[in-house]
Length: 300
Image (cartoon, rainbow, N blue to C red; front, top):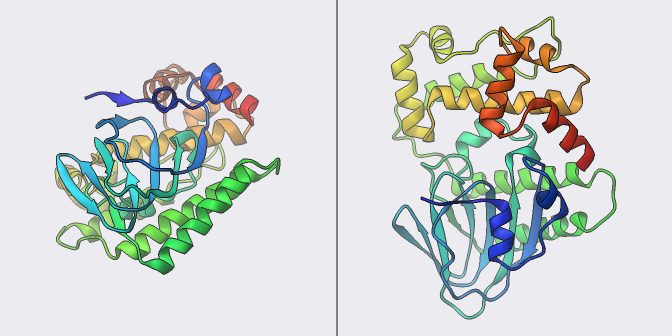
């Protein structure tokens, strides 16, 4: 199935292409817009970016061939891995939407929060109905992000990340507990706690200790296949994928916030050779570590 890129989104919707997306790849990107009347079906596809929509109006959300009605108002957390579309039904459609990529998040959302949110966990319902009070709460948060984005405030990106995390946490609060039918819920919590203990990496003298699924399974006293099955069933991702995502996020953070060279970062994150780290990073981000650092610092 086709995966829509951020660039393709702007072309499809007839909006001006943001300068950073036109000239660079894998650069940090965030945007927020007010929604207008939308009574047609959006393309059904996956995306290489995250999207959160505040829908005020009636419509139908389609994901993995399942239709979920939106009545009056809802917030929709679109996971990039899940193909989805939206069709407005009522003529009156308003609200907001925001788009952002992994690079913009810069490791600001903890793994246990990711596990609880439909934005990152495809096993959770993406559509959350809203009452009048919650509509006003989300309108305020989106409006604050919109105002910050158009401002010249030096630290607006940091404030937007905070507001974005508030929106995600509000969604988790309204949605309620994750379905407890997963017998491995406690194991997942222990795994995520152990994963978080490995980060952040604060010194080349204290390299990453646990790098493989087998190492985590050993620490948790379970078979690696059992750990993998529980995580896959509850999060849609394998143990290796979750570990790799966290390592890539940490690599990005170190490239942006430290002056360590690629070799130091490689050894700190458990790679025996810098060339292995360069290949690994490029496989996961489509760019090299040094080019990523240069592009992101230029953008900032």
